[in-house]
Length: 307
Image (tube, rainbow, N blue to C red; front, top):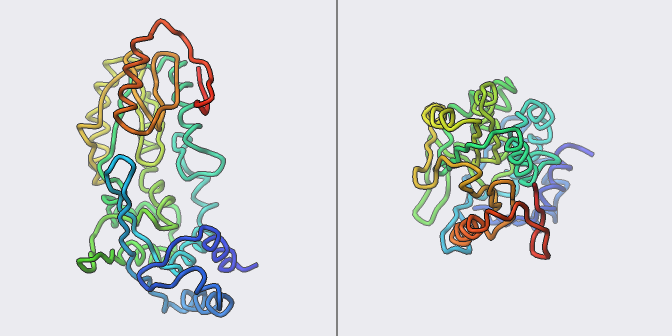
């Protein structure tokens, strides 16, 4: 089976919505053989040009909104075809501190790793939140990072075309030198590539990093070291054109408690919590009031409990 046929099947399985051209999965499927050949040939002969992404505003449970940027079905197929090729090359080089968008890894593996570092004495935590990570990825810096892995002009041109295609909104076409579409097939691996040097720089020190996409914790053994690390991390992110949200960033420890990836951490206990921020906060406070209880037991509502 050809790479483009495999890519089409993957995109069809995901059954996403149409892009700005209005072409749905079902419409493409009616002439899929011809469409796939034409799409592959346009990439091979250099005539392929991606269309802008369609802006879709999603409302979260807490009332806030999330912006998705949806490529066309054809652009998703080409992106998946490229992903099939570059994934084995790039994935093997990623840091063990990175857990998002990777095979056989999930947020639970990240949670378990936090517990492992805690048990080794890394009890001080820099809990950081990056401001609009996907929207602030610098195109030039991203392409430079991709080139470290794959120095292929054709592939680099494809990636540049995708990230530069812009967003079609109700107000018109928006073009920007930064930002990658969060709803695109290729974006997760590009996000990990963009932060790979960040991962490697931190893990080369005495600090410990646990990162899941743009959510991350920095762990240290002493309070002095974690306070020393804060400006270092801010400077490192600044070099990537990224900023932390001061209102959602804190220095804490396991005795005080904190939340990460939908879990509460308090002393030796780790417990799943509601994703609503206010309930998370009250959950931490409730368990802080019960510090004499050394462990938590699994109940019907809990997915998993760690010690």
